[in-house]
Length: 315
Ligand code: T6T
Image 1: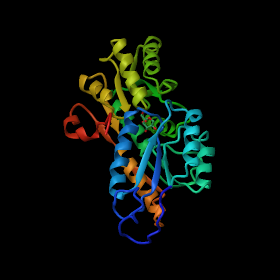
Image 2: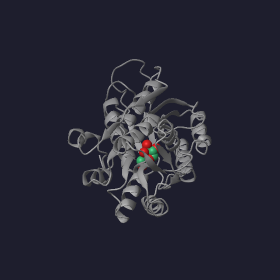
Image 3: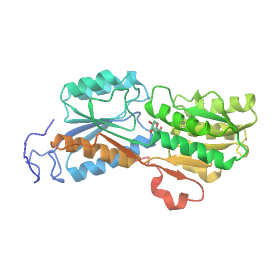
Image 4: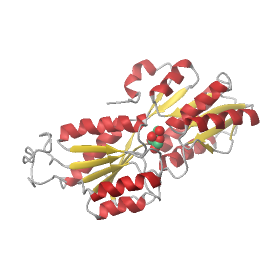
């Protein structure tokens, strides 16, 4: 860590060469650990973090596992903790599996902020910043309901059990569905964050349940998989697809009419606010314990006015 000087108030960095003379923070060193590398959601979050880091005059390094897997994310957190940064922003890949390494980092003196996903026991974190995931799940059901007022059979393609956002989005969707007896939900299946697996689930479900009218893909990979499967089965006209997230390929599927609505999160804002709260805590200020960010329902009609909701592939 290179927060060497302890200037108590405002003013520029005390000049250890690390930071960029930003808005009055020390040149803290913060590690950002993504849920998975290469995911446009976390890339966009990183862009928001880097922009905020410049303004705050802190240094952020980013790493992520190759898959959403606590066995792969744990060694990253362990090595980050060994390098003793001032802060850690992390999207845990499992509600229980990531507790030990994150708690160990906090116990070693690292200020922890959770972004996007959370833990069953998040008490070691000074802040948690995430979308209204249950609300987004409910909104996804409402979009399917609006397109299919007579109701019918729907399928949830989840991302992976054990990831907090998976559970919250499915709960929001199913709670909303339970209020409309015209709809039934098939047993949830999981794409395991693989587009090909999401596609396979959809093509096989269309064979067992040809009267399917709606699909909810709970994250970028599940939703891209659902769109791919529908295209393969040539069933685009029969099924309404609503996906969480707004990666460039998802937006193309919206434009071409394979997908009817996307629940676009605000990943850059989640990252920015997470960093701001961790830095506030490092500066001895009271951080906000929980922040919920909003979402935008993208449709063909409003896409042109919401181009800034589309996720980025690079900063
Ligand atoms: O949906 C996002 C994120 O919110 C979720 O926790 C995991 O999947 C994504 O990163 C999209 O792939």
